[in-house]
Amino acid sequence: MDGNGRWAQRRGEGRTSGHRAGSRSVRKIVRLCRRIGVEALTLYAFSFQNWNRPDHEVESLMGLLTEFLIEERQAILDNGIRLEAIGELDQLPSTVRAVLDALRAESAHNDDMVLTLALSYGGQEEIARAAQALAREVAAGNLSAEDIDVDALRARIPSISDVGEPDLIIRTSGEQRLSNFLLFGSAYAELYFSSRLWPDFGADDLFAAIASFQGRERRFGLVLERDAKAASR
Ligand code: FPP
Image (cartoon, rainbow, N blue to C red; front, side):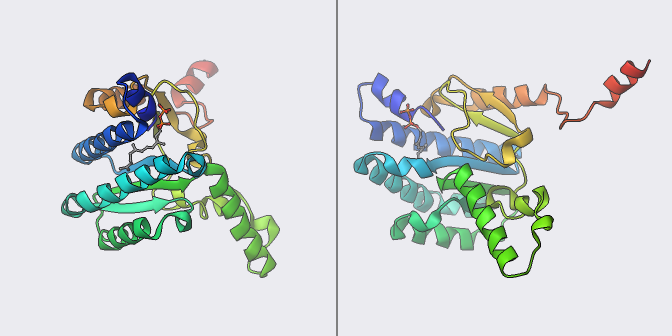
């Protein structure tokens, strides 16, 4: 969800105003995804590297996150949404952690959509943690080094062990990189880059991304049956 800062700057406003507008976009897009039947939506709301932003910006993001969790609680519960969170959650302020954990528990039995917030999240950090977990299991004698394969890692990567690997990753604001998002799970994800700044990202932009996804051929490293037949003629 990139471009909040630039959105505010273009209006001569402070970055907090951009994040506030970004938070309104979050609410719109979550509702829309729920309505059109998206089963899993993961939002990169705060990266592990974002802790290095100025204190007041980090505080304002934590405030907006808390506000979101409190104000959207009922809508999340009423709409069958299960709230999840991934990342180094121990680093979050205890106030945020309390509302987050409460809503995760309250919504745990919902199964119409999984909304995962990536908070204090880094894809490299997530892979490193999975490697640590595997190393501990080997050290304890519960696993042999030869058993460490892609499936063993996959089972210990929280961003995909629960909701699976992402089909489509959308990045806004014209930047064309993953910036440490879902690195393991993105192996075969379709990538879509929108030039729209996140606060301006709306229904038309989401539908354009989905239409682009629907027009793509996903091969997962294989040859499509159609092409194999044509080649053998
Ligand atoms: C990147 O834009 C965005 C973020 C670091 C934070 C995303 C947060 C929100 C959308 C609002 C709060 C979240 C929730 C879930 C309610 P940037 O600041 O890097 O923008 P810039 O590249 O234009 O400076």
